[in-house]
Figure 1 (cartoon, helix red, strand yellow):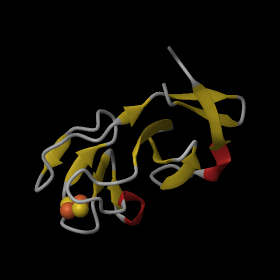
Figure 2 (cartoon, protein in one colour):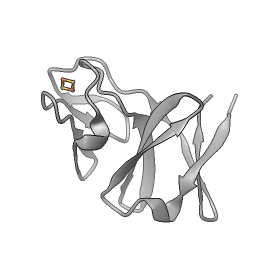
Figure 3 (cartoon, helix red, strand yellow):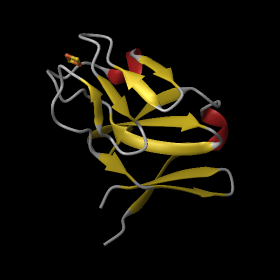
Figure 4 (cartoon, helix red, strand yellow):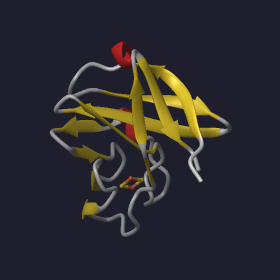
Length: 103
Ligand code: FES
């Protein structure tokens, strides 16, 4: 069942940028690419590197610790050492508000 929670504003994140938000005890990373928003866990699935300090290039985020690459659209691992995909969350835009489905 959907549980959309408001996390911020569309204007908080420019295209090709990302930002982390604290919601209900979780840290979620929202990335903006091609005019769309994608939400994933903020911690790398390797050993917990802070992806918000990583690099976003198109739809690929690179972990700052050991260089794992993930696709922000699907959470899948593009390049290791990480093996486990990132958890993804559905994002909805309502007017100026960004909402994330925490389920
Ligand atoms: S913690 Fe992200 S690659 Fe190691």
